[in-house]
Structures are given as structure tokens and as C-alpha cells.
Length: 141
Image 1 (spheres, rainbow, N blue to C red):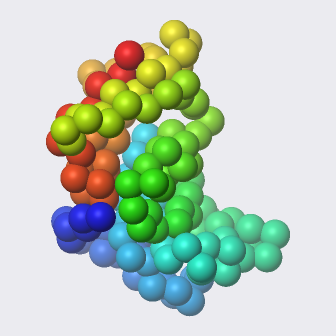
Image 2 (image 1 turned 60 degrees about the horizontal axis):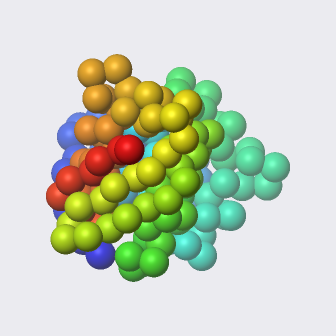
């Protein structure tokens, strides 16, 4: 698993606010589909979310954006679950990974939503997967 620190000032501010509200230091943070996604260690996800999702509600109000908290992937085995959480509520049927190229097979209704206007969501997903799993190319079929 590969994690490169690529933070701008805004993301550092998001991570500082996250730490103040939740009391846990986030490993990373990125934006997908205008949702701020924080990566925390697997054993701290429930604490980060809080009782009755109280921490998530506080973060949504403070940041004025929708927030997700995701467990840090530890190996390639976590790839499917990681993608599921990020692209939710959209779904895919199957994944195929060969030579650092990921093919996501989706239902015809979901394909446009996963790609996004001007391929924005596809580019965001490709950047995230490159950062965490060293996947160079993402194709949606």
C-alpha cells in the first residue's frame, strides 16, 4: 500500500478541524464528488463516527460539506470495500485488476454517475486509487 502526502492548505485545514472535533488524527483526506473523505485507522472508525453519528453531524456543520469516514486500506484485499465506500450510493458489478490497471464493470445506469461530467469523478477516483493502491489507470465499462 502506497500513501503519498499530497496536501494543499485547504486539506490541512480540514484535517485540523477533524482532529479538533473527533479527537483522532486522520491519516489522510481527499475530496470525491464534493464529499470530504477522511481516512482513519480501521480500529478507530467507530470512535471517529461517534455515538449516533454525532461527530459526523458536527463535521458536516463545521465544514459545511458532506463528510465520510473510511477505514485505512491495509492491502490489495481491501480494494473492493474501499471503492464501495467511496462511490456509495452507486454500485459496481465486478472489478478486474491487471498490471496496475483497474477495470470497473458497472450497471449501465451507474456508468455515467461513476464517470461524471467531463470525467471529473473518474479522474478523482483514479487519483485516489493511485495514491492508496498504486493503480495507474482506471477504466469503467
